[in-house]
Image (cartoon, rainbow, N blue to C red; front, top):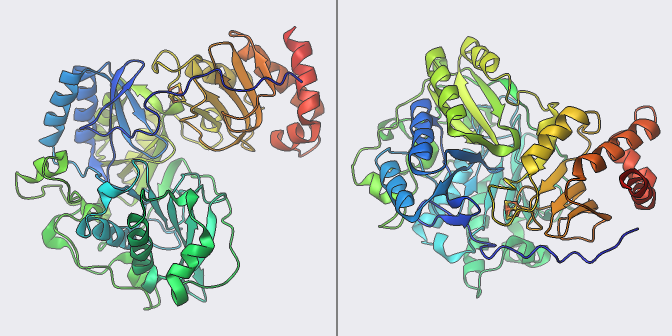
Amino acid sequence: MTAIPFHSAAPPSVRGACPGLSTPMPTGDGLLARMGFDAAISVEHLMRIATLAKRYGNGLIDISARGNLQLRGLTTESAQALENDLGGMNLPLREGVPVETGALSGRDPAEIANAEPLASAIRAVLREDKLSGRFAAKFTIVVDGGGQLPLHALLADIRLQATRRANALYWQIFLGGTATTGRSVGRVRDADAKSCVASILARLVAMTPPPRGRDLDPEQVRAWLGDAVSDKPAETVGSTVPAFGLLPITACPATPLSRPATLRGTETCDRRLEDGRATRPPPPSTHDPAFGGSAAAPENSLASKQKAGGEIRTPPIREDDAPFAVRIGIPFGQCHADTLIALARRAEDFGVKFVRPASDHSLVFFANESACRNLMAFSKDLILSPHDPRARIAACPGKPACMSASLNTHALGETTARQAADLLDGSFTLHLSGCSKGCAHPTASLLGLVGTNEGTALIFRGKTSDMPLKFIRHGQEERAISVLAALVRLERGIGETTSACLSRLGPARLEQVLSQGLS
Ligand code: SF4
């Protein structure tokens, strides 16, 4: 085995930074500005944002794993102009600590609970207690009600995962990691969830500096919460693959995707479905982002500039407008603005009004069934199925988009999806990373190819910073993947997955076969 210490790719100087609109981040192709939304936006807004990406940047747009839009190739001047233009669009921009929910929250017949009331309550705590600016830049809270688009794969400092016992709603609290790697504190009743999170946040900001979720001891947090947290053993969350394509959603007049302030305060669909033990959501806020407003924000922030115009004008959406949704994945999370402009234009032609950028590099459009089907037919070159091999590759922007990259991740991903689709059977995520930072897949993966100045590191069962199984020369990456694909075709037992097969063969055999195949 070729075991070379993995240190050759210098960490980017901006590591840990989280670019927003006001603080764009330098990358290989200029400045990058990021925006997240706490509600659906109109397809017209999507078209305008894509047009701005061409006007002010190089036209490349990322839809991140968390469903943020990232506009690339900006300059200092154009980033300022972009912020000004976006400020006039009345978008439900996310500011401060992200409190993330699924794109179908409150509309998903398969969800365990509507996550939005609890998420809104937590956002209100952060806002009213002025906590947001006091956490690390990437501190994130995930409130996952389950259903067709779970957030299991997202990293979270604090995760609240819906669960039911005897028809009563509980939230399982996890610290750090994903739904499968986070450490469980225990579960709390729905009625106590908001105050438990508020208590944890208050404890954290009293520390210097406030720690990340991964640094916390679950036992200590359990002690903070006292009787509110159950002392049941940790539960695990089964990993569910989010759906793509046509998704039936709940027609619920009281749970619109967005609506004007005057309509707020009615009972939510989720609460009507419950057995009467659910907590009453906090009083609706004038800027409740769950309903298309924007979270309270610092005076000079874009969100506050938006609000200077007064009334929140996000149009209402009625249940009969959108009994269906269609989730469309963007291969490797990046496309040219023209792709989004064409998609939004056709969506508008079909009568689709709303879209929400969603986790796992996707866009969720809301409409009637025929409009959704028309949009799927138009989007046949994008990802419409979890079985699309491109959906099983996590690739960062790579070369030439990022200045830290030593690997053209998208080109390699396209070739792999075409030539080794059978290797990508859904049992693992192939990670293609331009450098050791591992932006596209911060957790361990079965197989990863990581660009470095000296060559490409092939990682087996590890993170990008782990010891590589083998270093391969630049230009040999396709060959290495085809060698592994051929090995799996030869050795795979009946019903055996790629992950099980490669794990059974083990690192020594893989290294031997790669050495022979690449010589
Ligand atoms: S992982 Fe990819 S996007 Fe992230 S810094 Fe490295 S090359 Fe750039």
